[in-house]
Image (cartoon, rainbow, N blue to C red; front, side, top):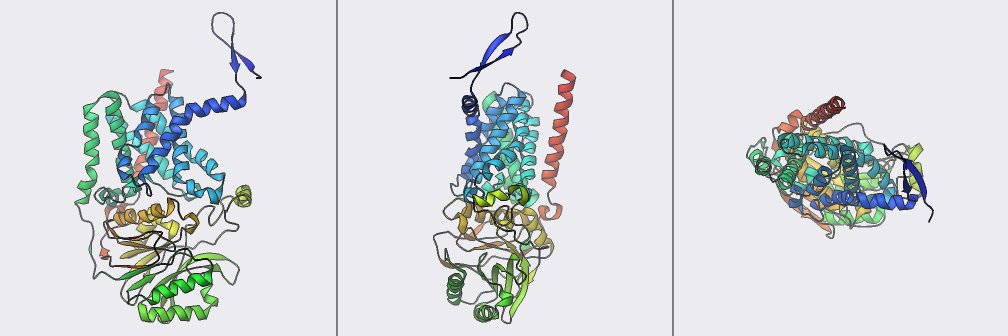
Length: 505
């Protein structure tokens, strides 16, 4: 074995010779030291669907917090936080491997770095006498990292920690006040308080954890919106995995023809693989369905006459096309490649987009002859809280998502995606429906309570009657004030720590 050496000054006496291990051995030793933090980062993902251990979210961060707290110094705590974040990103987005290949590791390294300050904050503040500061600052640093990685170019707001509580409308009461961000803050605050209680045997910390956990049910007792008219009948069409645009169109046509009349029939994303502006025959067939079964919202995914590709929600009435919305937020690597000049090589070793789709220019409102005013959004856009707020500000009484996750069929992605409808409903005070091409199609009322769940193995349709609503939640009115406060607290505490370090030195 080849071993090199380096001289270390030892103060008094001769220099000490320390053996330096070969590079491979050093890498293995580094992995062994960081593996606990990496595994601790993967643990919280079990609180999301499909595992669905949502109760775990209240304690799943404790191992990572305790690892950071026990670090010998702040630098090591930051490194442990970085590895924790990398483990979380890999576990949460593992299903992207076919699309971006080794790009997932690059994303984990880049996004994981956002958790380094979180590790440092846990090390610095989870001490006796600092409980209140820790329960405010540590969740704020987490939330600032979560908000930063929600930037679309970094992957978008997938697996926001607050979304783990999608099956608990009482907890989602916080989302109506401060969005999913406030739910995340509460979860991290409870984890922090419990970790302090365990490590220092502090009864006040345990009591503080209970108090924070009670905030959600308390917020749920407040009603910010009110019913608005009758509950419309909305049919969600789910044909399953059907290869080829022609057979897929025919399958959706057969399912729709068997439906009773509805106020709105929704097909999934990419349900129409043809340019409808150049296919009047297909528009005529869709108009015939609309006359017999109600207005249709289909989704066009095809190259237009100019050679461009977009994804468009198209409302079809008895006389043909009535409205159109083009998807604004595109999926990184799936529908476009960020910095294609530098990262285009990924298209040769993965299923990353060979060409970029063309985004739309803003949200639109659609109105049906049956009296429904709704905001259409497409697939990935359900992850963005601001888009739901945008359509509500423009007058939507119902939020409609069209989705397709067939590329990730059999993974945790479809149920995780569908669960976001509950969070968006609680945030906006509007019912949410989602029609997915291959599942999961789902519907939630204005408080996030589940009305329908049509899982991936199922084929056919489901009819729901979500009561529409009006009025605005505090989150609708005030927007992302919670993450902004978290950023201010993070920067302020960082400045305080820096100033203290300078004074000590």
